[in-house]
Length: 229
Image 1 (tube, helix red, strand yellow):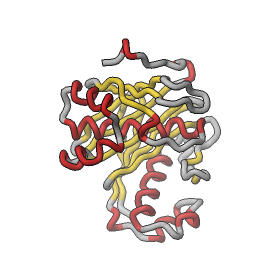
Image 2 (cartoon, helix red, strand yellow):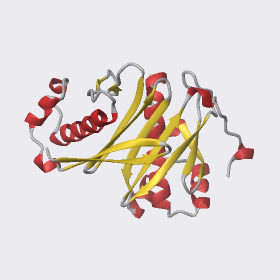
Image 3 (tube, rainbow, N blue to C red):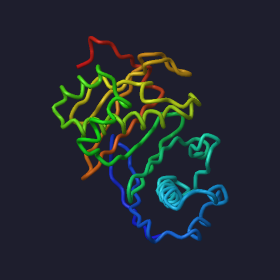
């Protein structure tokens, strides 16, 4: 499969990006993966996306190892490393940091305006819609950012909480020029209801990228109505 590697910085982290041509993918390319047999029954798109993500991860890791697949489908990172992988369209990205920091990255193509209105109820509630309307951003961009941010949050938390979370498990409380804040709507293992997480975001051409990065020293921030916008 034809690929190209590049990097960019977000929230102080180096993000490794792989741009790939899925039309050039062949099953033989999977032999590069130690766990290639686990993808035998996957569709062609899933195989190409997975391969691109693992190539990005290998670039991000100091020893260029390839993360395996956990029981929940999550990447298995080397000891002492926390990381996250995302892919959308013809690009995949990976970022790593020292364990036990929380880290999660996600990239999404900006939703068409009519589709954003049609699916919003599955992503946000009425209170969140007010936050988005007050942000000043076009609704489709704002909704895509929240969708992506919640994905980044869930990726960051899953290794610790070991629980799958729906979009209703967190709500957006602020959306600013470079960051947005999510607050948990229910307790999760190690985190109280109301625990707040700040994510950084980029508008990247026709898409957005969100990144959550938080060290244990940051402490359990909490959201309250008095601090929201």
